[in-house]
Each structure stands twice: as C-alpha cells, then as structure tokens.
Image (cartoon, helix red, strand yellow):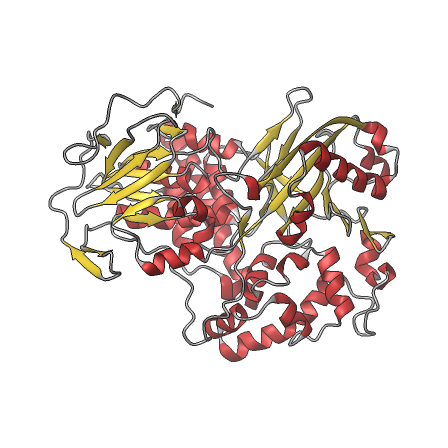
Length: 568
C-alpha cells in the first residue's frame, strides 16, 4: 500500500503543473500578440517534457552534435525512450551558452550566458522541476535603480512617471507615460494589423519592416520618444532588425514580466541533464564531416591537430544542435540542399558581451537597490545587481547587438576598467576603492563555437509579403535533423532551444525510414531508397566506420574527454 501511495504522491506535482498550464492558457489568450505567437504544439511539448516519449519498438543509434541544452534535452528524451544516443561536443565543457562563472575565492557566481526565464516558459519550468532543480525569483526591475542619460540621473520610479525629465523633448501625448506605455502606444497600429489581417499575414508584414521604421512610421512616435526607448529599454539593439523579431522578444523581455532563475547557478541544468544520461558525452570532439547514405549516416570527428586520420562513427540519424556558423564548417556528403545552405547563411547572430566586477561589499544596498538593472548611455549600457545575501559580484555591463562593439577588441583589463569607469560615474568614485581588482569578461561573438550571442533576424526585404516563409528547421534532411535556439521562436531563449529539441526528438522517435532527397553536384535532387529492416537494436552501440571509408586506428585519443553520469 505504501509504495502505491508514494507513486500517487509523485504524480501530484505533475498533475498540478498540467492544471496550471491550462489556467495559464486561458489567461494568456487575452493578449492578442501572445495568442498570435503561441506555439500550436506547446501543450504537446509540455506533455513530452513531463511524461516523456512513448517507448520505442525500433531503437535507433542517434548521434547528437552539440552538448548545449538542446542537445542534452534531446539526448535525455530519446535515451529515455530506448534509443542509443552519443553526444559529440567540440568544446571542453557542456552547456553551450549556459555558462556559470564561479569565483573560487568568494564562492560568488555570475551568469555569463542565460540568467533568467519568464514565467510564461512553462516547458522550461517543468524541465527544471523534473530534474529536481530549485527555482527562485529573478529580480528584473527595482524602482530604486537608476537611469542616466545626457548626464541626467534619475531613479527608475521617476523615469516611469516622468521620462521627459531625462531631457527628451517628448510630444504632449507622450509625456507622463512610462517608456513601456510609450512603446505600447506604437504597438496600437500593429494590434490593428493583427485584427485586420490575422496573425499569419500581419507577421509577414512585420517581417519586412525594421523596428525603427515601424516606430517612427506606423507607430507615429516622435524621434525623442524612440530615442528614449533605445536608451532606457535597450530597444536600439532592434532598431535595424526585424520588427517581428522585436515583437517576439518583447513578449519575453519586459520589466513588467516575472522571471525565475536556478538556485545555485544555471550550469546546474546541463549538469542535471548529463547526470540523467546513461550514454557518454565526448568532449573536444568537433565534427568535420557527415556522409549520409540510404541505410545509415557516418560522422567524422577531428582528433587532434597532428592526427592523420579522423575518427568515424556510424548511426541511423544525426541531430545537429550546434550553432549556425559551426554547422557551416561541417562538410556534408551529399551536400545540403541549396535552400538549407541559404537558410544557414541567412542566420543573423548578434554579439552579446557581459562584464562582471567583484567588489568588497555590495555598495548598491546602501542605495536601497536589491536587484534589477540600471540603464546608462555610457558604454556599459545595463548594470544588473545581484540579490541580497548573494555577494558583491556585479554584472557591470551587459551589451548586445551594436552596443557590444565598444568592448570588442579590448583586452580583459581594458574591458574591466571601462566597465568600472561607468559604474563609478553612476554610483560615485568611491567604488574604485571597493573594487578588488578582479572580474571576468565574456564576448560571445568571439566564442569559437557559438560565434554570437543569439539570433535576431533582419527584415526580409528580398521577399514579398506573399512569398515570404521562414525556413522550417523542424523538417529533416534525410537522416539529418536540426535543433537549437536558431531553429525556433522566440530566438535567444533557453526554452526555445528546449522546444526545438523536443520537436526533433518526437520526429526521430516516430521515424518511418522514408526515402530522402539528396542534392547532386549540379544542384539537382536525387532520391535514394528507404533503409530495410530495423535501424538498430537494443544492444547495438555506435559502430566505427568500415569498408570503403577512411580507416580508424585505435580508440579516441586522450585529447577527448568522456563525461558520464558519474558527474553530479
């Protein structure tokens, strides 16, 4: 009787989560933009992350390229369903753009990558809960933080009420409104488009406009008001990018939204996923070539610079979760179709840079600041404060898109001191004596594996509204599948990577071994027949390449590190 009771109790949080998701769905449907951007398969993905996939009767050998959150989630879901999964990671660590800095002397942590999740990201919340990770509030807004522009400094509670006090020559109808409300004024015309055209046609229209063009044109905002949004809400990073992308981003990023974070650091998420796997993760294993055939697919990885031979692995399917630039460096045989190559080249990664400074005490507490962010028109742009009792490691600068250019090319010491200058300008010169001389800088555009912070697409000016269709990355090319934040909406969020991984896992688990098209050297497509028999067996491991392919000598060299579930 006791085991039965325990099992029933174990279902309680799952059932409560599903019930809460239905409540959210009802509440969320009130926002037309949210309703328009809501994934039609969201509830199915939530169910998969909660209950898993159906156990497969045809176990397959799956190679997952990339050990970021997309690769790890896909590997877990597929492994739990009975497939044999191996993860290949080019870097010497797991996590991708989840990257937690841990100060060995103080024990303080700083998130160099992902740092928050909005309350609407129920799939990611459910994943964390299922892995036993504790969540707590991420303070996005604190009314006592500052905004400083044009050498005028105001508390943010004053900016919310009288933004014109910052020196912007706003129109009478714009004065006395918060920056968020002014932005909503501009969105009124977009709302009319949604109602008149419907979601699909309206989003096609928005894809062809820049945010700046829409705010000044159909949004009918004054130039000072637009500059205010750029300075205070960091919307200037979207000014010359797609208005549709700005809408998607705003649905997840606003000082009026509620956010969560992982207690103890975001890197606990990839660690928990790794601990749940029974199959290995191979680090320092960059994929250089993928050869796709009618019965299997061969993946070649580089061993170390002086090696004459490549290590080759064989599988039934491959899931590519690496960034767009990383995938472009892989040689495919047969080549990827032209439309896939064009989609890869068309991915627009924006830079993102974070600078952390370590102080001897959290001096901002003396100004009644307990979190949130300050804004400045100086190079550092946004300063995020750690919550009470979590140390004095300050995110002294978070910049992205064009704003990150100021820190590009600087040495670490130069970047730290530039951020320190901006913190001192905002809080006073006394902070220079409080800085302990240490810090860390992460420039994602210079990361050899991501080569950018996240994807934000420019307007699709080369298409008409009638013929424009964003590339559907969920459609596989033969035995090759794609996932990652660049393959789904909204770009730049951890949950987006998780959603893409779940979609790919669903397709792989239900794969029927259809015929697939390959591109000939002349760009024409050839069809290859379906594979015969079961793709794999429960006991089959990834096989090494044999036959007419390059020989493999020995095992993986010492330069490769294998991570297993023993790491907690």
